Length: 189
Image 1 (cartoon, helix red, strand yellow):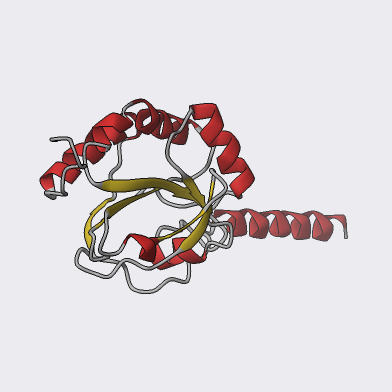
Image 2: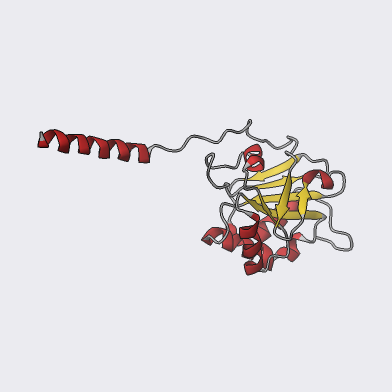
C-alpha cells in the first residue's frame, strides 16, 4: 500500500514537471506583418498622460514603434536609456517615435521618468495591439523586442527583429536614413 502511494506521488510529480516544461500556446494573432503591409492602427495611453493614435500621423509624419518586453528590466532599461540619451540623432528626421509594451501605463510612466525619456512610452495592457503586431511571446506574455518603421502612408517600411538595446538610438537613426525618411524641418541628417 505504501509503495502504491509513493509511486502515485512520483507519477504526479513527473506529470507536473512535464506540464511545467511544455511551452505556452502561441498567441492568437493574425498573419505575420511584412514590409509593405498597412500597419495596424492603435489608440494607446502613454507615459505622458496622452493617448496616441497611429492614424493621426497618416499623411503627416513617419512613425517608429519600438516594442519592448518589460519596464525596469535590464535590456529594456538599456534600450530606453539609449533612446533618451541619443534621441537627438532620431530627431534629425521627420518622425515620431515611441517605445511600447504590455505594461500598465503607471509602470511605463514611472519607468519613463526614471530613464528621463523625452518621448512617450505606450501601454497596451489588453495586449490587443501587441497581438495585431505579432509581438507577443504568448497570450499572457510580454512583447518581443521588435521595432516597426512606418511610413507617412501608414505602411510598414521595415521591421527590425534583432534590436540591440545599447545602440538602439544609433541603429534607429541609421535605419531612418537608409529608408530615406525626410529630414526634420530645419535640419539635415
